[in-house]
Image (cartoon, rainbow, N blue to C red):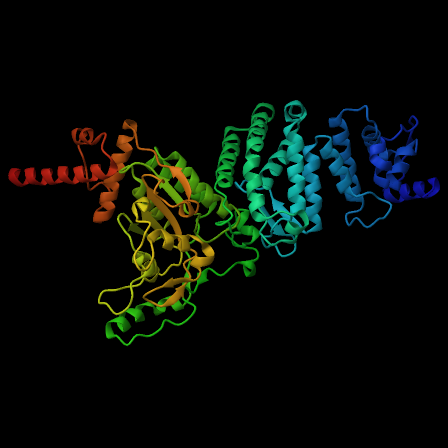
Amino acid sequence: MDRGEFMAALEGLCDQASPAEGGVAAPAVDPVLDDFFRDEFLQMVHLCRPVPRQFLELQQALDVVANPDRSDRARGVAAVEIGEFVKRLDPSNSLPWLSEPLDWFRFARNKGSIVGAWAAAKCWLDKEEVATILSPNIIHAAFDIKSKAMKGISLHAVEEWRQGLLMLSVRVVEDIKHWKERDYSCALACLVNYLTFIFPAGKSSELQFGWSLGKAIKYRKSSMRWVLPLWSTVIDGMVKNLYVSGKRRDHLLEQQQTICAWVEGLDERNFSVVEIQSVGESSGSDEPIASSERPSQELVVIEGEIPVSSDRDDKAVLSQYEVLRSPLPFCSLPPVAKLFELRDELQKEFPWAVEAVRLVFSDLIVRRSHGALRLGMSPVLLVGPPGVGKTRFAQRLSELLGAPSLVMNLAGTSENKLLKGFSRGWSGNRPSRIVDLIRQEKVVNPLIILDEVDKTFTAGGNGGSVQDALLDLLEPANARRYQDVYLMAECNLSHCFYIATCNSIQSISEPLRTRFRPVLFQAPGPEHAPTLIAGVVSDLERSWGVPEGAITLSDAQKARLVGLSAREMKAAIVDMLYGQSESSRWVS
């Protein structure tokens, strides 16, 4: 391209020819740029003095980026401007004499520009025809531009976010004082996207980068050591320099806490890509855009036939379980806004269980923010002394979520028949209690509460130990083909979710312990007594089927309950109410 061709090209790009601006000779170009990444057009813009007015700002940006004596920040800002210009000029990246925008954005990133890192990742997303929703949700969502269906993210974009954060971590203290609103937005986008877009195993990008799912999870967990301080610095900078509202600050902190808890709980064995849902769901709309992409919201628990029995009693029982051979629905995950309301309500009822509430709802909120519709979460282990409300906490959670639940007291249990079912041929024998719960409730994802899992015997009887049976239930691949001894059929129990309780983790086998996300369930203090009393009274009213407020206690009676555990408190309240009944009998 000679000067005449170049000027003709400029005129073609201008809506109307403008007078050329005078200028000094073009400065030498930093060799690192390799003649503006071998871009003939930009070379001519840089060398042409004067240049048409429409290209003066571009020329000035080229002068800045070409000058190694200018600050890294100035050169990074200029490189982003040039990259965006090239991208607008050639959106399809088809002109051979133009550079690639990705080269300019990476140059900006290497000069410390977080905007450059975000823009570089955006180049990969555009190539893959993927867009992200940077919505007010806790988690960002990705979807296919054409079909509007939720879609995964390749490691190319993830690597751009990671490299940007690594560069930012060593420069943020110095650079943040110069940041504008866009810098903060891009920093938050890189932080959230890098931590939460975990690619599914088996993707081609895994082979390209040599990463496995386990390695990706491990790296994100180890990254939290430097990501969390960086994240806090960004939020502090927004509060101080952008004067964000208190509501916005609270949302940013909520987002940080929820995602950190979710990353801490990641486990390769329990990791599964959430169900694909339309972008409409993730953007806050109740109407899906691509309903054809939604997974089935029903499941057949028993795909095969249930073997018949010659015993008349067995025949009568087996006929009740034929319903499991037909599609049954899932309990649904509430919308994100509703989950926050439920979290606050549970926290209000259990103010001493802050960590347990956080662990449970971080999982639920992240799933729903990613587009999951089916209720579920990774197994949780509540560790705490007796009588502090662990079982009641799990039951109350199921009530708030609208999911059926089953409490299985495993204390002293040596055989797995409650979990696997009893053999046919004996009167009163039945299938697994979990299978029976699904039959009764006719939903495929109930909450199973494994009470006192630490008090089971590790050595089982003829059928194997309880802890061995639990390993199968907690391993999704095995749970999909869970053999019920009574039904003599494989049952898909992979969508049940579990909360276990224990006083100590020492007696729980190592393989079983690793299947859970343990969390310390603190004992309530004296300051929590009014809340604990109100909760126990409410539980009694619900279990007795009486209206709210039917049970009343005097201040003197409440004072006598302070210091008792929830279990002791329940018994004491019943004794007090019985005493009241006795007194009223003689008075009347």
